[in-house]
Image (cartoon, rainbow, N blue to C red):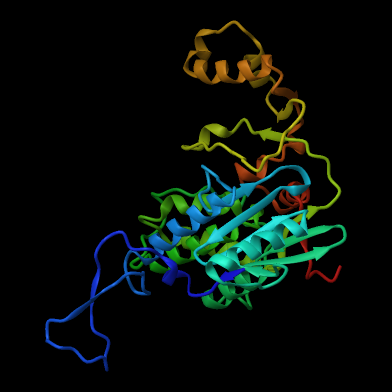
Length: 355
């Protein structure tokens, strides 16, 4: 959905004045207009529109997500509906088409909306539906990136990184102008929404945004050549799938400075313990062993957290071989053979591949 003249719906909380529009007669040269509503061009226009929309959705019974303020949810089960907001564009998702239509009617009564039908393209995301599931890719965005950078006719490669090369801030000649490098990395970061296969390589490049070198730029160019091999690669979400939370923990986590938590508020209840697969037997032994040793005191708090979840049955730890460790392509470089083996299990699909 698209809201017509969205910014004009915003209510002003402060006094805002403007010069009289051209053609409107004025009694004095100092005469001005006081605005009762928001106008395009005001600094507070987007904020006031967002506030008004949030209040309207909450009155309709929607709850705003804490991790993602653009997500609103309502109901449960088959009547569950989710709204994703981007300024004046709204995406609605639900198994109940009548619930979606009711929301459309309510929003139209308040703001006047334009119904754009089933989602096919949204913020660079291309959505294709099939009886077996939904595929999401960024092919148009990827091709435009290759054209802008001059790599549309480049020779493709089969992995985004070189196994024997680890990037460092002290290697290579500093770039005189880092604008191009930053632009490429920024666009690659947005492409990782549907391309987890370039997540590790892009994360490595993003560490050198302040002072990139020619070697870092060469590494960025390799990712572009990898994208050239399959610009239509994207994620596939099957219709028939059992809800089971699984996590893969790689023993090379120490190379990462920051850690993140994954939080969902989509009203999904997960029954049973979440399986955590780890390729380190010693890490599992430390987590399961209630006795601390001197060498593990520095991770005492983390171990307490894992053991608490383990004892409550929230998670269960399982050993897995390194060949089946799906977290590997997110923590280190691989040769094309092993890299393709890992990413083949990530739910990636290229709808534009003739094969």
